[in-house]
Amino acid sequence: AQSVTQLDSHVSVSEGTPVLLRCNYSSSYSPSLFWYVQHPNKGLQLLLKYTSAATLVKGINGFEAEFKKSETSFHLTKPSAHMSDAAEYFCVVSLYNNNDMRFGAGTRLTVKP
Amino acid sequence: GAVVSQHPSWVICKSGTSVKIECRSLDFQATTMFWYRQFPKQSLMLMATSNEGSKATYEQGVEKDKFLINHASLTLSTLTVTSAHPEDSSFYICSAPARYNEQFFGPGTRLTVL
Image (cartoon, rainbow over all chains, first blue to last red; front, side):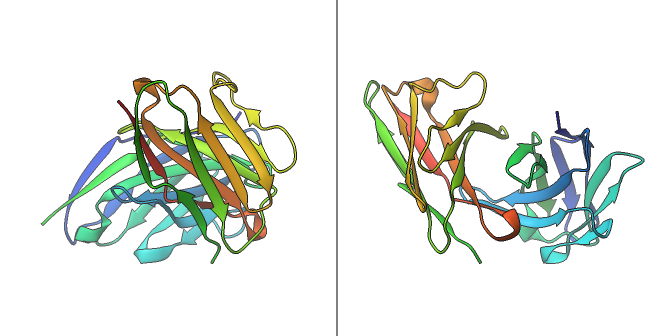
């Protein structure tokens, strides 16, 4: 069965510094991987997705993630954090045409002024 | 892009009553929709898969008689929490696959059972 592990429950960075949110996955087959962001009391927003094309995936708002099969990782990065990036981030893995999505526990990103 | 709506966005009810939550795909049809539950400060957990015209498929540990799902049309799935109790208080989120099977999530419904 597929699953994801988000290695940090909480990450705190200063505005303008890089962001790294870590995610490791487990899957018997070639997975699709996603990062979603959830702002307080808001719905989930797709940041980016990997579906076996380019291993470096660029998403919205300056985020990107790199699929590393050898490390079974799909870490999310951003060169420079903005205050508006403060939110909960979920790493998600799916099989079967994206109809069976399994969420990680989430990482809360705090951005300090 | 594809839009999924949920109604209501929040609801407060008394213990023992039933609450219905609607999930609609506004600009596309969905033969399948998914229902998730998210407890405070926790991740989303898949509860069930809603199938248009047939029975829903429930994840292990989810009571099908308590969480009734009806997918009566290609744009609407409903989740009814029957005889709600305080422990059912949670954030309920639905999703539906649109083009290229990309999942689109609704904004969620916050249920508080007193």
